[in-house]
Length: 318
Ligand SMILES: Cc1cc2nc3c(=O)[nH]c(=O)nc-3n(C[C@H](O)[C@H](O)[C@H](O)COP(=O)(O)OP(=O)(O)OC[C@H]3O[C@@H](n4cnc5c(N)ncnc54)[C@H](O)[C@@H]3O)c2cc1C
Image (cartoon, rainbow, N blue to C red; front, side, top):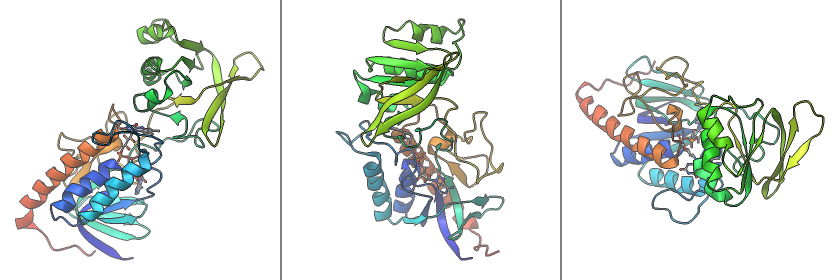
């Protein structure tokens, strides 16, 4: 198996990884991005994005990502398509294993995002980014005066449904159980004039066509009838986002919510390893936040590697 050596190995080519690479490459650090697939990250599947600073109007997620990736490459980053299946971060040289070879870094950045949750509903994967969303803050404004559905009864679903009531004509809130009468936020949501609550109801299917979502099929408990709601957007909050960390195992510390634990410099619990973007399970998952994380990590890495120049070991070829 071939071995490649870099100052900075970045796993994940979303806005977090690309921004980090742009800064480290520009600091003359030999940088590689290892990216499973440029088309499957959160930004890559975003249909329209209108809130990235400096980019006015609406661009697609893939267009914005292409600009970020190209900028990193222009500053000298190597972009390598490769799926990382494991890492070994026990020594000073961080080893990253992929089918394309082993990449060894003097520093390592984890930036694989939080798209690790499996779809819960029929049609969810087909229409992801085309009417199916996990982020009302990101996409709510695209549904002004439209009908939308929110699925789930956890606190995230309730908060996101509240956001949508500012934009949508009707928010159909679909819950398997009736909300707890003691839950202040759920009860406040039910009082909103444009909420239509479907309690003890299951989402059966998300349907649509080439233009995107056109409706959802639902079934109320105790009935056999399937009803169709003509919604243009479906916001799914069954089990929340899941950081992609399977290749990490238990080699770094995690927060209780599954996000990688970091300091304010984005350093993980292991020296020489940083984590940026949605893999931290940040409360506000936005492209600009991920990019900001990438910048902070890059500057911290530059400082770290400069301070280690005097003790730089020979490459370990084991
Ligand atoms: C539907 C939707 C709409 C959104 N709309 C907006 C919006 O309007 N505005 C906004 O600011 N934000 C929006 N967001 C949020 C934003 O896209 C994310 O916060 C941001 O993309 C996170 O960046 P990231 O780099 O951490 O992860 P990602 O963008 O998810 O990138 C992760 C990268 O890691 C790669 N990867 C994963 N596993 C591996 C592996 N094992 N080996 C190698 N590579 C791997 C993936 O292929 C991917 O390229 C939206 C998100 C979604 C899902």
